[in-house]
Image (tube, rainbow, N blue to C red; front, side, top):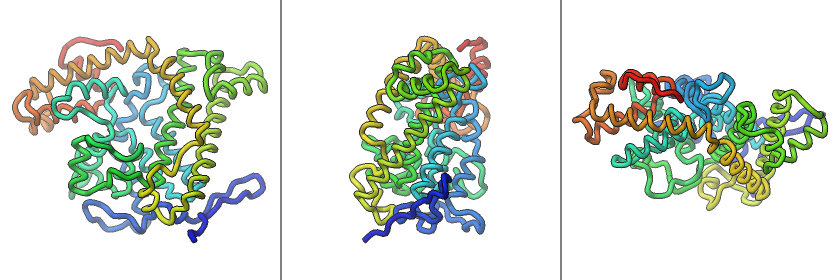
Amino acid sequence: MTEKPPAGRLLGHIYAPPTERAPFATMPAASRGRLYREPESATRTCYQRDRDRILHSTAFRRLKHKTQVFVQHEGDYYRTRMTHSLEVAQIARSVARVLALDEDLAEAVSLAHDMGHTPFGHAGEEALAAATSSIGGFDHNAHALRLVTKLEHRYAAFDGLNLTWETLEGLVKHNGPIPPPVPTPIAGFDARWPLELSTWPGLEAQIAALADDIAYLTHDIDDGLRAGLFSIADLAEAPLAGPTVQAINARYGTLETSRFIGELVRTLIGAMADDLLAATGGSLSRSRPACAAEVRAARQPTAGFSPKMAAEVAALRQFLFARMYRHARVMSSMDKAKTVVEELFRALSRDPSLLPTDWAAGCGQPGDTATAGIVRDYIAGMTDRFALQEYRRIFHKEIAL
């Protein structure tokens, strides 16, 4: 019989997390290792080293100036890709601790999950994917893999960050198996070092993906309220958030905005995290995986929300889609951002000499596949403000987002 996972204890009203990993956790000692062999650290596990390499990478630092919903310069308090990734990592690590998983792996996947995003958020990605459709398009998960396996140049002995197999698997598959057609960067790497693309990832990566949902839904509510895209009264009628809004109003009356948002966000995060823990705990009790390999081999994800919570989360996402992501103010900025990306790609592909010298050195003829691929990588790495700076340099005009 599979032994029960170590359980946390309540000491008075204080929760004490488990002190050892569950059998279905991803074990550092059983890691499949790194593509390039390296000596192990005497002071950190392999997943702690992965987390630290991600934090110190150039690609992660650039997330500080990349759009989440609002273009980075619009306000100091709105989320960027970096602040979002930090919030995802905090939630994932907390959930992983309660489930006795490897917290460091959950954190590493969370920190890396958005590293492949273009400037200007999903609008930038859509524009770059359309511009590069003839050479395979653009996918931010595939580009994140390319960043950590090739484009980061921090080490003398190899390209990329040389992360463990488990972190790479989680980065690529945190949202589930990759069905055909597999994006070219992922397919190419998989041919070199198979990531078992048709299976689910380990539990730590599954938790990171759900922590992403929890983080962006709650902080988009925060940012949307502060930006005036919808009101507290609107939110009182929204799925999932509505009952919490009404309960806060009933208990405290009129609160200053920052206190109201704080109460709302922490309550919603707690409700979704508690549901995730309960539903995933139930799934583990039913399937009783003896090891991480059995989690990967399952026909369905092991981690998840309850059916009721999943439906409410989907409905809240639709509310935000209508009231925030497709708000006229947001769409106006994003339409202009697409123009920036499209015109930059066209200009740099036609004249690679406009690229920095080290980038231009790898180009072929203007407009050919090799040049287009290099330009795609160059634009994908830009921050919002650098993309606007490059637009000014090349076209000698401003574009106001």
